[in-house]
Image (cartoon, rainbow, N blue to C red; front, side):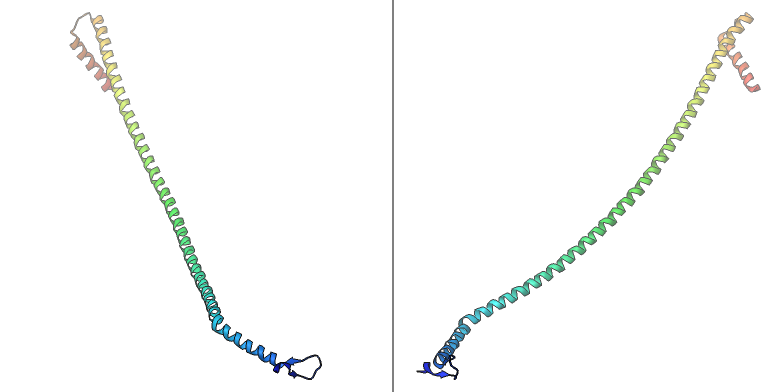
Length: 173
């Protein structure tokens, strides 16, 4: 009945009010069904997506803060390792200098000790050589004196006589 009502006077552009009313009712029913069944899940999905995006942004911010913290810790660790390396190098230099001084001191002490021992050895050798020379001179003197004098003295008397003569020579110097 309403499907044949013509709205408008233009030729070729006829609108049927009944169809329009039917389409309007269908549209309203469709909107009600969408509002009843689809609007809630779509809103929930959009809210869930918004929450997920918000969480991702928060997570990214936390990750950035944590990365900055780790970078700061690494920089501090690097600075500490540089300071520690410098300290180790300085300690090694100081230790090396002390060790060098100790080695030089020990070498000087050892050289002095060797020099003193060499002097003692030289003095001992000199004393031994002098004693040996005195003994040789005494023996020769006894031999010469016994041949010259043709008098035989006992060996101890001759030795005493020669020793006193040699000491007399040593005192006159």
